Image 1 (cartoon, rainbow, N blue to C red):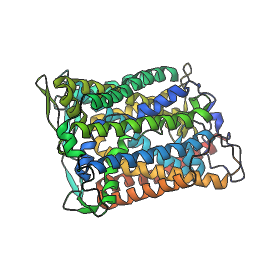
Image 2: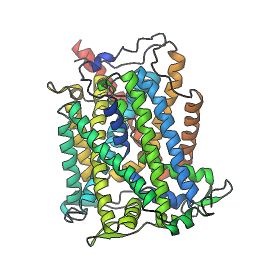
Image 3: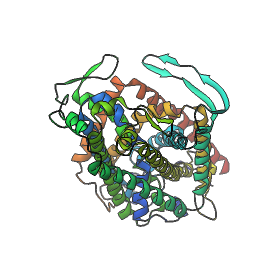
Length: 521
């Protein structure tokens, strides 16, 4: 097997099928519906049910709460429309990894894949799996983070400037055991063909989209609360929303309205993330030049509309103070929804204790479907990297019967299970928010680069609003990252360090691959 290191296409080249041989082994099993479901299913996890509380604490304004989600919606949809052009040009397994490799060079593609494997994809899968276990514990109290099977040690907190490292429990408890079993089951199921994974994705995505839509409808017709409406809308909607207003983001730090909106993006952007996962599976999408851009636009549009609708419902049902401060809800005598469980508090307000149980089921469905999409898509990136000689060679092998990246699925599964047991995934997820945004910025910069270096390349779809909308995206995302560097170093510097650690790894892997090529020749 060749381990040749791929290099970007020379500026004179217009043959965008130069690497397409790597996908001929894959089965085209995803149509428009399945691709769109993958976009929506990967986006909708547990964040929409929780993060509005933290955003409300930071902005302290109904208008700015909605504004934070509108900013996230704009960035997400513009990003998806921009990625649609790249996906239609290069419909190959690996998606964003391929776009960075071809536009900016193999180092940038590797750094993305490295960070994706180390924490972005696997850490998200681990966290979502634990969320599934947490809410399964509503019905089975023995499933708990405090019910230890094997407790190895507790890592004490370490203070490094404004950051707190460590402070986590390492071991196997019944809650993360459920997460591990979920990850193993879904990883094995996805070996049995892309169509099998797509069927599961379609069923669970339809269920959770219906649940969110139901939350909005019930909120409109059953949840209107006179106290909440008076507190949030009757002359109070725009409070603290002026450009001259100052906001306390903790530690006595006061910032202006634009800055606090940027800080608030940590939660909403994370809740709307993973829409790009469909590009990882591009080699298995039917008619990708049409279906990839369409699925990105449709999927992100529907989810963002639901997210904004849910936040209006939160404001219709609960006063901003109730959203900001959270609530403790009891169902069947079990304390299961604590501070920040906004959606749980909303359903409990509407349906009593039954509402809390319904929300637990909704989050379990959401977590299950989200993890299936993340597991299915992530394995395709490491497969593409291995084809380029930048990951373990065996990861490039497909299952001979089902033509799925079985080894890649297993490697991803093992590392995810390690993160589940380590207890570190929560911190790691916080650390990579900044890095995720950096790679989105770089990829959209790559769109500009390819327009200049390959003006005659076939583009079945061209990004809507180019160059204005992609340029606005870059400016806004850069502003958010700069603000986070300044005011939320705990979310930035560790993530940046994880990315930079990939540079020596890249050159080591490249050198090793070159030696193997020379030896084989």
